[in-house]
Length: 239
Image 1 (cartoon, helix red, strand yellow):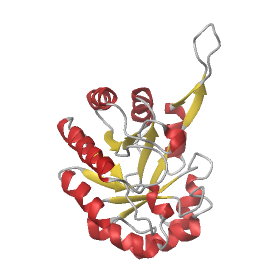
Image 2 (cartoon, rainbow, N blue to C red):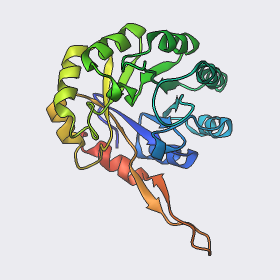
Image 3 (spheres, rainbow, N blue to C red):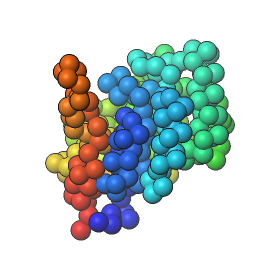
Image 4 (cartoon, helix red, strand yellow):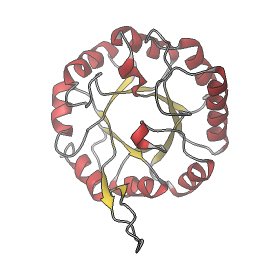
């Protein structure tokens, strides 16, 4: 199956195994994260390096987030984020994903600019920290002014399906100056609806399913991206 070139599909991958499933299912890129239950944090050097070696048809983007919780970062955390971006540069990663806010709920422009400067040569996505901003219209303009390539957002709602009204407004406001990518709760049952209601053509989803553990001691299941679910989700927007 060849995806319609009008659309772009990104899989939120929690492991190298999920990256490979995303590639097999036809995703254009992955966002490699650790600790997805916390909203995603920067994965290990080893995981990034192995993913880079094995991804040949799918672009590799890496989240730059030193911890879970809010998006207000100290100077020590900022220094780690810069070093993680430099690590990604050395490993020939295609793109990085970050987002930083002020205590007032605005885009932290000085810190984001610092990270943008470190990211030269890589694609940059501003992540769902955007969904915690107090003025989404102004935040969008700030993100555009920074030169980010795309914005991942659920329309400031728990899921993109619930946030379609704001997603439509933001997509109209962006007017092609930045790519809007709808994420959170996107799946094979609602991706076409979200596209129709917003006009957005980039989508972020995990397509994960539980995998039972192999241990005889009964350790719990893991959530891994399914290539079949990736393909099924993409197929909803493919003629």
